[in-house]
Amino acid sequence: MSFKINDTITYVGKIDWELRNFHGEEYSTQRGSSYNSYLIRDEKTVLIDTVWEPFGREFIAKLKQEIDLNEIDYIVMNHNEVDHSGALPLLMEEIPNTPIYCTANGKKILQGSYHQDWNFVEVKTGDRLNIGSRELIFIEARMLHWPDTMFCYLTGDNILFSNDGFGQHLASEHMYNDLVDTGELYAEALKYYANILTPFSKMVTAKIQEIVKMELPISMICPSHGVIWRDNPLQIVHKYLEWAAEYQEEQVTILYDTMWNSTRKMAESLAQGIRLANPKITVKLYNTARSDSTEVIAQVFRSKAIAVGSPTVNNGYLSSIAAILEEIKGMKFKNKKAVPFGSYGWSGEVIKQLNEELKKAGFEVVDEGVRSLWTPSEENLLECVELGKRLAASLQ
Image 1 (cartoon, rainbow, N blue to C red):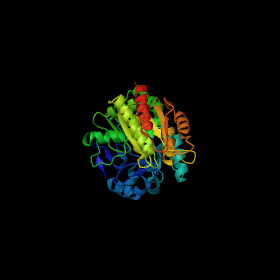
Image 2 (spheres, rainbow, N blue to C red; image 1 turned 180 degrees about the horizontal axis):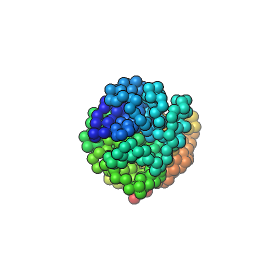
Image 3 (cartoon, helix red, strand yellow; image 1 turned 45 degrees about the vertical axis):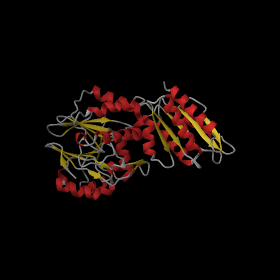
Image 4 (cartoon, helix red, strand yellow; image 1 turned 90 degrees about the horizontal axis):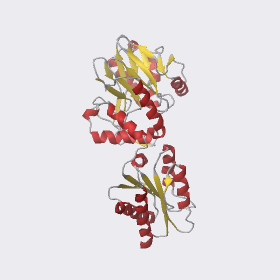
């Protein structure tokens, strides 16, 4: 798919309607995605990023329909993860001497991924590439979300090519933010931030502040996944600043796994207690064995607090709880509270273990929690209701 963004900039990327998982099986993409590549024509012609390797030959064939490849003067690789650089080896077979502009870390990653010594030109923040009537200004964005990441800014058109920053996994025939469903767009943008950029929130804030100090007017933001921000493009920048600032909504998310429904009953009673204490709090429950972990992380991101429950099995908690706790730990969430709960048959140490793991993940554990022997009695379930009330009270 290609289309004109303006008289001199053409979208030459690929919309992937079928994609359902990303980063291996780690990230669910129920609305598909896109791999965005951009062709800029001036006195010099620049290609910004490529596409994922499975679409490499298709990308090259369609690019040839758009331009004689020998007319491409420069290639800019803002980030070199394979979903952006996968078609690069095929492209370089066609135009092997074309300079590739990237960061020093970008060069290392490309060499490590493809074992080729192409014509690399290393750039850093503030470096400029004159292409005729306009310039590209390079802005390093290390760890947003890889060490090699950079943005580039096109003067004259005032366009920020932001790679993974400000993107979403969203396939659409309408590739502009003002043409898609706003609710879907922001659901995917938040999910993307929560799962990809949360651990680097301090760097997100610092990078945005750095760009603001550069006093670059921005008329459009062109990311490498999802739709282009052309209508009030800074709205997503403001959202990033909000999300990076220890983001919270009036929400509690309850995560549990269960063998014979004892822990599920406890989770539902805990939810009842939260709602009784504060009906304004949104409560969401997820059986982690049956839930999309990407969605779960997004909901934890939105929450002021979480509750985590499991039966005790083989002196520990169930594997789905172990998996989601490991993901949560990696997100480095800040300023969130938590409580543990669970059922057991004879040993019952899972409450202590969950308490320790939640603390390791950076949560303030506000209650030692509730545990139930075998099937919870009415008294046990009332204890869970009271635990929910105490958790809600801790959020006042």
